[in-house]
Image (cartoon, rainbow, N blue to C red; front, side, top):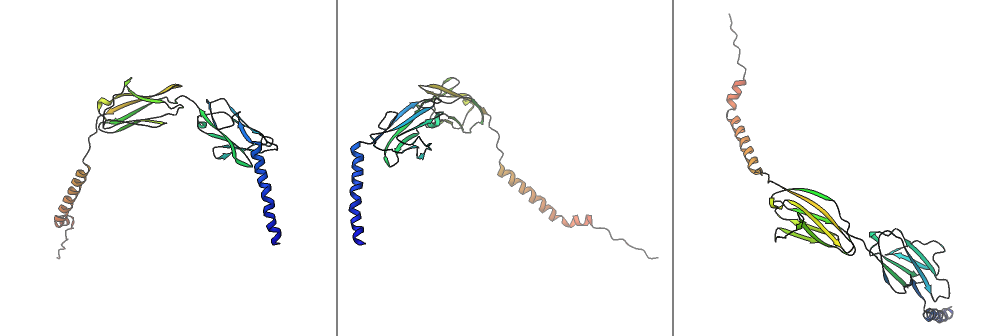
Length: 259
């Protein structure tokens, strides 16, 4: 038994080596839409996209796999061997930056990836009215996606907003453009416009800022303290005069005359 196991090991090794060498010698490779290496595919929202994966230099039937990101795409029978096609329909903004990968089933290191570059203009419109008291802070926020990334600016009453240190603050990411105004004054009243512009188009959103007079603040602590003092004064007064109060409510005794 020991001899038969020891002889089996060198018997299998040449078979695996020959299989590997045969794969290398034939130059087995894949292509997607005639690209043998990873590439980026530029498109726009709407029209569908077809991706076709093809096996080259194969002497046998090779199964193919498709992935969207890390998730495997379900393929129908007849669309898996030596050539495989997938369709993305409709293409939308959420497909931007997504990677589609075709892999050889028996050797997943053999693969070609496609990164979708979905280009679209800024998606921004509408208006908003904000009421804020003097001396309070207010934040105006634009949420906008675009590809390529847009440039953003703020206008006040259709003029470029002059930023004042410690009064205005701007925060920006690829999807958010925010203007904060600290301790607003009456002079901050007006229409603020968020302008987002890219080579593919322009989007705007208006904010109508209405600064209201500061409401008087009642000293809550003082009111509570005064109420406590008044309550205690009344209580002590009642205690001090309890004897007189009891006499008032005490019924007079009735004298009975005897004849």
